[in-house]
Length: 288
Image (cartoon, rainbow, N blue to C red):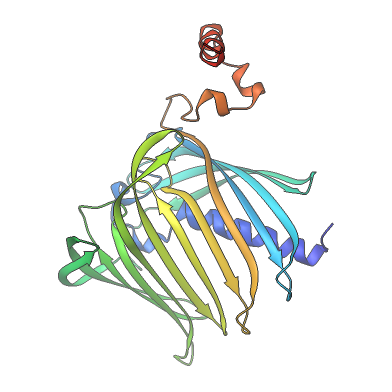
């Protein structure tokens, strides 16, 4: 069993990752249609598995925490949305925590933090060129000021193709910088047995000498967008201290049935299917 301090560190890391995925930074949202969750039908959901490895100075994995999370869109309108988040944390074979809570977020279509267009232009990703708007977002907090420069395209999903964010303290000194960019578009990838069009997003974050690099795959057809994610975090000595991976397990749009192939679903789930579906599955697994 890992120490209490380490466990809390990992748990917080997982929670931050989930909130980052499900809520997004609200000041960048211009309408409900731009949001990775709010634009879907109510009751749309997805389940993900997150594995977090803590790594020692020798590069050995000292502990692994598994978090399985189901996020569901409970309500959505033009001004806000509510997500239900149910998570189970497991260390080794032992289940150590289960939580079920709601997250309410505003869709910021005006007011403080609303993105303002300051320029227009084009952005090339691979062989494709996109017409974009350059938007500026400035947020004042008690700790300092956060400034984000966004490259926004109304014809793509995700709409933000590049983002550079810097946080300045009260003395106007930079505390951290995060750069996120779509690096490839219109890539074909198998998502739970169906070929889907996806894009790749790479995010670099640096703060107090530490760095993290996030590679993720985004699919506009899946609630929340992210279908896989890998994060590598390094300390000030450039040593890997944590590795986190996220994998999509299942999802559904509105009241549609699960997208996960029935043969890959746990037996207890398949038992809840109507009898005719169970018979079809049995026939498909019978050797010919």
